[in-house]
Each structure stands twice: as structure tokens, then as C-alpha cells.
Length: 207
Image (cartoon, rainbow, N blue to C red; front, side):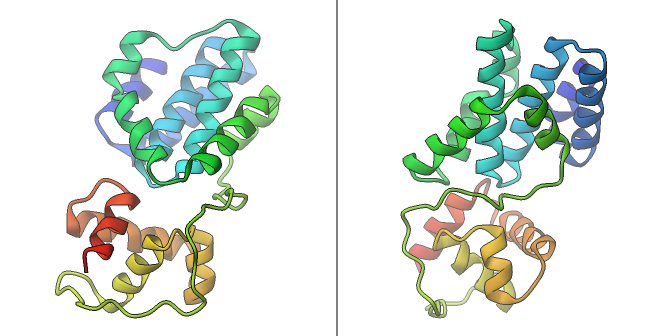
């Protein structure tokens, strides 16, 4: 299960990877085996980082580090290399200020293992995301030069992303569901060929 989940994650097939990794985590937890538990926490953090969920990624990686200290288990250097851990880590970290990133990591590291597994298996969004230091105006101004590639709604979402709002905050601002926000962000990333929310913010700033 670990190898199959890892292959799917490394290939970027996250729709398939998420249920596989969660199932592997359940099996590891049921068998009380630390190695697959940590491996699946690591893979689920990689998926979160690649799907624009930096807080979730930081918490799961933090939980993984907590297991290193409490259980003496480690993700292999080969897995770190093949998963492009450093690249994923850098991308996720760039989406938060240092204080928010450190706080999320510390939260994950401090989680009891049972809570960390529960969190990894849940559908929890980044509802308790630590605040960033980016000021958020009450009424965001329109983009100066709307792009022909993005719809009007996608432009609105892109602007709010650039202001540091979480998916939940964007959903509240635009009176839409968080799932709809996720879909808009995924389309924006695809249309503009970007890999992170930080790139969206830079793109908006340039306009």
C-alpha cells in the first residue's frame, strides 16, 4: 500500500492518491504499525502542499516530525528525493508568512498521534489557519486589467487569493461554498499554468 500510494502521489495523480493514502493510514493505525502511519502522513502532506493547502501540509509534516521523535521512525532519503519534498515544502511555505507557517507546523508536531491520524483522515479544511500578515481590505478593488483567460468570478477569486485570504474567507466574501472556491482556484492555476497560490498573487500584483 505504501509503494502504490507513493507512486501515485509522485506521478501527481492526487485524485487517486488521496483515498489510497488514507486507506493506507487506516490500515497502519488498525495494525498499530508506526512506519506506514508516518509514511501516509508524509504522502498526505505532499498532496495537501500540491493542492494549495499550506496549513494542512505544515500540520501533517509537523506530525510526521513528531513521530520521528516519539517513535524513532523516519521517511527514507530516497522517498524525500523522489517526492520532491524540498520543492513541495518550498511551495507550501511561500504561501504563508513565517509566523503562520511555524505555528501550523508546531500544531501538527504537538498533536497526539491519534489526533494526527484523525486530522489526516478528515475532510477538515484550513478553518483554523493562523492569520497571515497580509492586510485584507473590506471591499477589494477590481483588477486594473482583466485578463481574457479568466472569467469575472475567477478574477475575483484571484484577487482575494492575492490578498492572503483562505478558501473559507474567500467563500464568505463571495457568498459561495468552499468547494466552489477550490474549483475556481484549480481552474485559475490550470489556465495560467501556475503551481501555487503565491504565483497567483504575483500575477495579480503585476496587473
